[in-house]
Amino acid sequence: MTAHPPPGAEADVAHRRRAAAVAGHLHDHDTARRLRTDPDPSVRATALGALMRSEHLTTDDLREALTDQAPEVRSRAV
Image 1: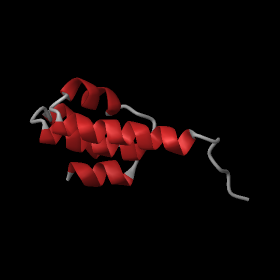
Image 2 (image 1 turned 45 degrees about the horizontal axis):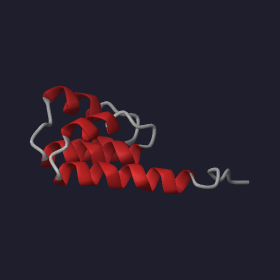
Image 3 (image 1 turned 30 degrees about the vertical axis):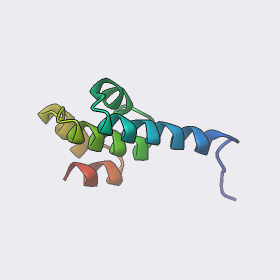
């Protein structure tokens, strides 16, 4: 049996992922940096891209992303 997320959980993740993407376009590096530690890997990966887009990506950001437990975050860092 597959566990399903609670109702609304997927919508919450989608909302945070969109917030990360928009942060990159608006050069809102504070929001992007906050979302870099989100529990969901898709949000962390999007936030990493937002930091890159807003030209606020640091060596420490990349170092952390390259050691992230989620393959999609590590892949985004490369």
